Each structure stands twice: as C-alpha cells, then as structure tokens.
Length: 139
Image (cartoon, rainbow, N blue to C red; front, top):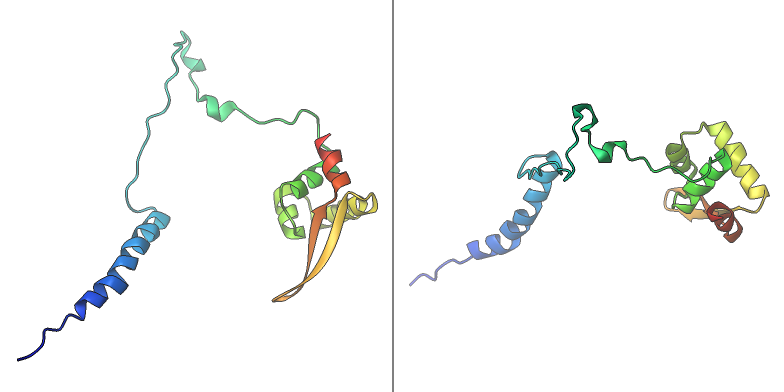
C-alpha cells in the first residue's frame, strides 16, 4: 500500500502564512486595498457667514515664541535628532557654505560636538549638541 503524501502541508505553513502577512503590507504601500474614509469633523457652533467655514486644522500653524536666528534653527534641528550635515541641510533649507559657517561658529562657542566614527562604508562625521547648546536652545 502507498503512503499518503502530506508535503503540501509544509507549503501552507512555510509559504502561505508568511505571504498572507506580506501581501497586505505591499498592497497598502502601493495604495491598493481597503481605504477607510472618515467624514470631516463638524463644528458644534454654526456660523452665519459661509466664507468663515474653513478647516481649522489647515489654519493652525505652530509658531515659535521668539524669532529664530539661523544659529537657533540649526541648534534646534540638532536637538531634534539630526546628526549629519546632509540631514541638517535638508531640514533647515540652508545652503552648504552658510550651514558650514554656522556649524563652525556653534562648535567654536561650545554648543556643538563633532564625533568622527568609522562606518562600514568609510569614515563618517556625526554632530551632537552639548549640554550648553541644549540649554541655550530651550531657554
């Protein structure tokens, strides 16, 4: 008598289950799949003016309490976790020469610490705010 072949069970366990988890992620990344639309929030207060009916979240802007100089802008970006020259430049929108002079100035004043590391693809330079830089930005 021939024994039954149950090798298809291994296909289900080792292929179908992981694919069932991966495929929805790929579909969501491509924008295909379930899209849940939420109705816009309605205000309880009705206004008589139709031109004042606008989305409140679009008009809210977070403004800093004091006008920031470019040094404070770079220091704030450093305090938020940007470590490389490129990420700081991307977040602040400053050009290379101007950012380089600002970083040199911050390092000279003791607000910035430069750390040279050896990475897998070669040496890399990381920038960290010092305690003095942290205190100056948040004061």
